[in-house]
Length: 219
Length: 177
Image 1 (cartoon, rainbow over the protein chains, first blue to last red):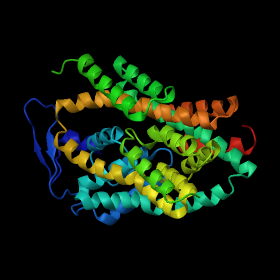
Image 2: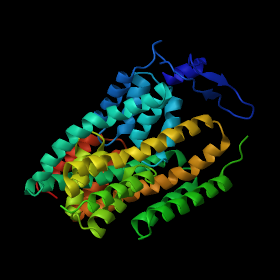
Image 3: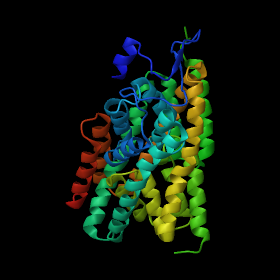
């Protein structure tokens, strides 16, 4: 959907598209109220709430996939390119990444109130039900079978995290500097007792400096 | 479990960690563990791993749930609510402000440089988060093998993540780990 729209050069009804000299991409500026791609009516707060409720409930272990499926493919709120942009922002901002997607999509469609509606949908109902279910199960965490089950899930879930990290490197796999940076960050956290902030900013500065030096000359 | 200073310290620490959790909450899991298991001894490594496994297997906002379980262990329901808000509240404000700035300068060349430098850092931190959790969860080579196979299945997209977690739970439940 996003691809088709881009190819046909369709612009959103409520965005100003201006091509600046020296940039490859057109600059899209948001207006006060952005309308949905598929319908003329603005996205309601309720639909933002329920969309991210859905992302939250389906997205165990991979919320980003579901956020894409619902916001881009099903509800057609955003072009694919715009979602990727939001995702790359959320990837290196602090916090739960999918909450970040909720904030950005909500803010993009309906401003601050939209962001609140989306985050509330993501957190409120699944948080309360999940918490009740969780503390009920934690009461029985000493039972041997449950302990074994949780142990198995924990081992598998650690693997999922590792894989999610590896997948995020994919767009950068051709840059050797990205591998060095990733390895340094990994080693800094996993093998040293250094506090997080020095590791984070030290390696981040290295990463940015390396990218500036190693990057191919822009046309 | 303890006086009011413990839940306050936990909430403040979680709010701080969530504000610097570049790449997602999993990147600061080692530091959460340090704080609640090593420094304060509010729970054992086993408890911590249980919270992680439960949060991962219950549908919903996993890391927010995990922190609410930890908060609940320290200070009951109020602790759970405070911990949950500390986990997603500060980042929400940061996300909102950052989105506005990012959107305004989305065509600027410096954005590509910054992205190219920071994404690998994020990658390293996420993998380290997984490795530290694996160290807490993997008691022997069989559990470690589950971790490796799960990572492989997820990386190649051979299996839905829910199925992988389910398989881990079944293997554990059958006493194979």
